[in-house]
Image (cartoon, rainbow, N blue to C red; front, side, top):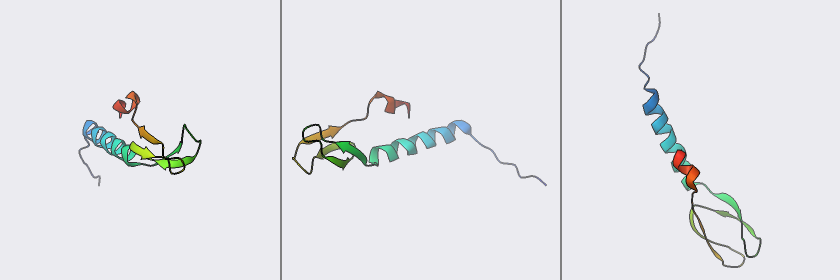
Amino acid sequence: MGVEFNFNEKSFEKKLRKEVKKNALNASYDFTCPKCGAIFKAKVGKNVCPKCGTEIELKPDSSWNKL
């Protein structure tokens, strides 16, 4: 007695890539301030160093387009 199901590999891959990209864009990353060297958590977008107040914008590079 077997169970059969339809699996759409392309649809699954598309949904998986979308979810991975969304999670990567919302994640926090350890970042070192280029001005004072402080290490802090930063997200994609505008960030401010908690130590010296330097404004830093993190942008995804072209490799993110592969997601």
